[in-house]
Length: 396
Ligand SMILES: Cc1ncc(COP(=O)(O)O)c(C=O)c1O
Image (cartoon, rainbow, N blue to C red; front, side, top):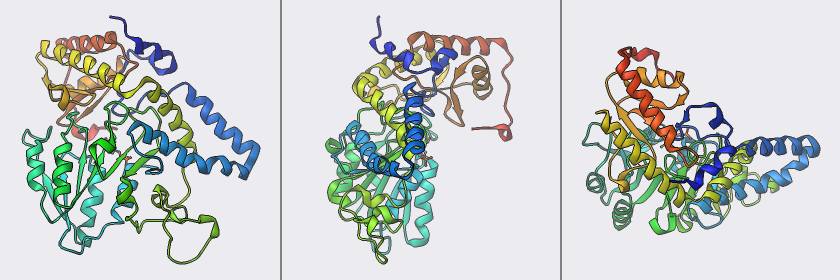
């Protein structure tokens, strides 16, 4: 079957030198255009000096609105920042845990960095309730999340796609129940945006964060926070700075006068080079289209699963398409050592404790690459050379 998305391969130089660049759950391939965009940044700085800010400052909202286009957020409701952990802490700094509504619902499968920020609020009165996984730390049951929501719930913080198993959480009923109880929902969509269609307005989610290094192919330092317009207008983050103010260049001393739009989350000066890099990724993802990316992802992940079944590997990613993200996690004896040997053979993947080897094709990957990695796994397992890796030797 011909695959129209393969025409994008020449736009991603790394694909030429790897047997399979299948680590898009961690770092998407760099678009060739990013070279030009970063040069544009350097040229402007070099040529115009301080006047470059006239271009750089509007770029913050422009970039945020580009991400907004991918998740169907209205203009002015998304803000860029360096990382999701910081964005979460900015959001949290606008909350009050002193009253009776002080419960925060998390799952034990949330990305730990984000959860740390919530646990740190216990000192300010937050009660953190952690929803457990029933299957030993891979997936979540919606029913269990719903049970944790009550009238004392302030926020439910969930990952849309779970980083360990690539399970896709059914968040719609969670959002509905949270709203019935007067609670808000914050979704971390880092493992989803750019590969799983997201429509913040249809979901009616209150807040959403995510970043660009993975499926958006936008590099590091360009993360985003969406806030539903009515929520946005009420949030006053204590973690703030001059660009959160309506008029930063008035240099007024005293209380911050929060900007009406998402600038109220901005705080200090933006990480400008990251915005240039991010835009080149967003442009391609928008042009390819998330619906087409998702369709291809389901096809390749289904194929990977049947090839894993044929070898008798444990598949830790849910089978049903509506519960599956964009990665297939496979596990077997000495899978960690196998992951290292796959990397030596030119297959770029990663491994997580309990999840196993994460194989993450994107729109530019081919069926051949997916078949080749599974064939290499079979070869390595048959070789009898795989062994246990001491836990202390774990790297990135
Ligand atoms: C679900 C999820 N959230 C957040 C992050 C990263 O957070 P930060 O931008 O703070 O490094 C990752 C990185 O892998 C992730 O998978």
